[in-house]
Length: 74
Image (cartoon, rainbow, N blue to C red):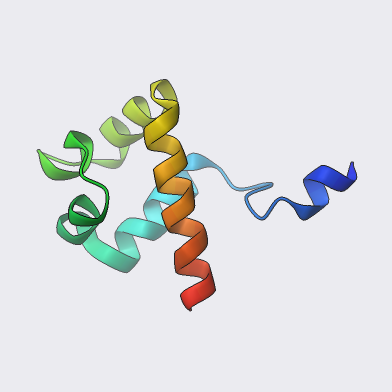
């Protein structure tokens, strides 16, 4: 393991885990208000969200940033 990976708080977490935990914490409606992307606001599902986030780096960064800020707040 490299030092970079040891310091990365997202190391070892899958995108599915991150999205699932955010949905459990905020719910789809609140999550869609915090990050206004269609996969969270229009007929949301984990599967459609993962498909979009894997193809869209800017949206994935927003989701990861929200996850990290949520961890700090807990």
